Amino acid sequence: MLRPPRVDPSRRSLLRLVLALAALGFPAAVVRRAALAADPRLGEIWRCGASECPGYEYDPLLGDPDSGVAPGTAFQDLPDDWFCPRCGAGKSEFRRLSASTIKS
Image (tube, rainbow, N blue to C red):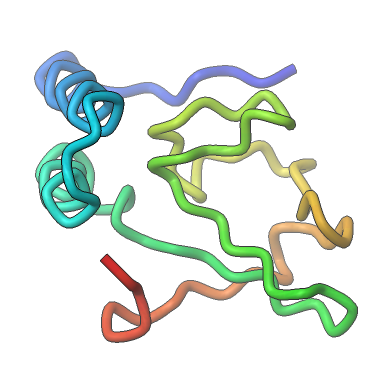
């Protein structure tokens, strides 16, 4: 069973604002900057590195709704038994992309 990550109250309010900006269609760069202010980990994109995977990228701002992971869930807060929805690889197969690789 997935549990929501623990977030302090001041960051929780900022995170709600970030999700509202995304829902209202604000540009991705604006939403990502606001997310970084709420929790720097929300700006990290993680790519599956399993050899049989077509390159799935986990974006914390999107979450993984098909697996019950809410938007705004940092990769580090995913449960240990979470896996790549494309190939089934575990979290240990994922690598954090560098800031220069991430598209805004």
